[in-house]
Amino acid sequence: MNYLDIDLDLTEEDIELKMAAHRFAREVMRPIARKLDEMTPEQVIAKDSPFWDFMRKAYELGYHTILIPEPYGGMDLTSKQQAIIYEELAWGSVGLTVGIGVAAFPSFGASLVAEEALIEKIIEPFCRCRDASIVGCWGITEPDHGSDTLVPHYPSFSDPAIKSQCRAKPDGDHYILNGQKSAWVSLGTVSTHCALFCQIDPSMGHAGGGIFALPLDLPGISKGAPLNKIGQRDLNQGEIFFDNVRVPAEYLIAGPEAYEALLEITLSATTALMGVFSAGLARAAFEEALEYAKNRVQGGKALIEYPNIQAKLFHMFSKVETSRLMSRAAYIFNQSTSTPAEEYSVVAKVYGTQAAFDVAHEAIQIFGGNGLTKEYHIEKLFRDARAMLIEDGSNDTLAIAGGHKMIHSYPRLDM
Ligand SMILES: Cc1cc2nc3c(=O)[nH]c(=O)nc-3n(C[C@H](O)[C@H](O)[C@H](O)COP(=O)(O)OP(=O)(O)OC[C@H]3O[C@@H](n4cnc5c(N)ncnc54)[C@H](O)[C@@H]3O)c2cc1C
Image (tube, rainbow, N blue to C red; front, side, top):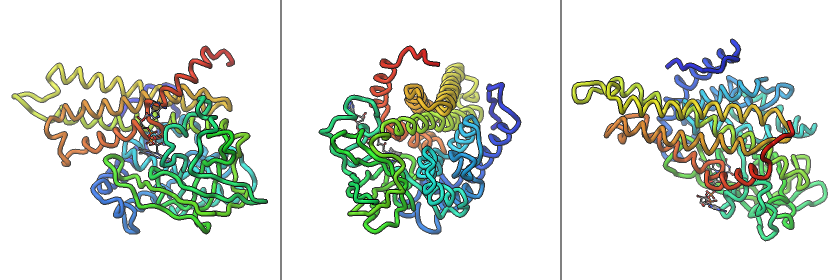
């Protein structure tokens, strides 16, 4: 379905990128995502799984490097182009889009500091990779630390009573890693590298963290079983364990002195991107409902002819449009500054994911009984949207943290 984008500043290049991403989403991602959704978590990651077909095709097109700056081999995109492409990919499958996004995480994190060793050992090989043999992930949450790991500058973030379950101790020119990350690490069981967020200085609570971009083939690293879940079943997830792992210090992106600031920069990007992804998913659900309402004849008329269905579709459409405007704007703004306004990214994520869930929910209502069956794509979109209300920070806790940030920095006159 051709979709009007009311941004009058889109260039021809923006539109070409958008159309190419949409084609990929429609022809490759959708069919693969639907197959993966029906498989067990083990089948999803098996060698001959369509998951790897998706990954290889995405890597061939360079989509694994969307977030990486051009000097290191990234796609050389503006922030707006990144948002445009990600929205289209998420229209195809939000789970696969999260996958191709986190695959870049160690390189994305490393690009924020751009140390020579990190460029050479992490970023450049990843950007050159075209066969999906280098796959990153982002390990931040832990079995006993979910929401609390994602709220930099919130008072509890610096509470020394908080003891992380994954710690790094300096040891000469190495760090010794012990502990584990949660079962929710996206691509956790298939990744070759990790952007690992762990505690270095426990006296500072979560704020005493460090970020590593490390290969996962070091002795002492093991993985858990792939997680089984209701939504985003096409996204592999699982634990990573560390048992006295010796990590060369050159893999450290940032230590405690910069941890909170770098985490905030990272979250300002990822949280806004979750809003972008949710605009893609919401649009997919809206389009499913629109198409269905045009074709389903009930009581002698197509559903679309009933005024309540038209009004319902209008409210769904409003949510799609506002979600895109907010998330794209928040992402572009926060990518343009080294002192991000994270609260705007939180608005994008909390509003956008709730909007996606509401739109998918209303879409099922329009489908009636058919919406509950596996025959129609809408039930998958609904389950995928449900996961987004928790993914990358539950909306409840993000709202508390976003509210705290907003109250302390409002009004912002420093521009
Ligand atoms: C699809 C998906 C992908 C994910 N990908 C990754 C990944 O790549 N890497 C990674 O590390 N993690 C990942 N996660 C984990 C995700 O970030 C966490 O699930 C999320 O932060 C919530 O943490 P939790 O599940 O431990 O819930 P909890 O933190 O235990 O929260 C449970 C409930 O309690 C509420 N709550 C918690 N604390 C408070 C409080 N202080 N005040 C009021 N209410 C509170 C929350 O809002 C929530 O409703 C992913 C999760 C999902 C669902």
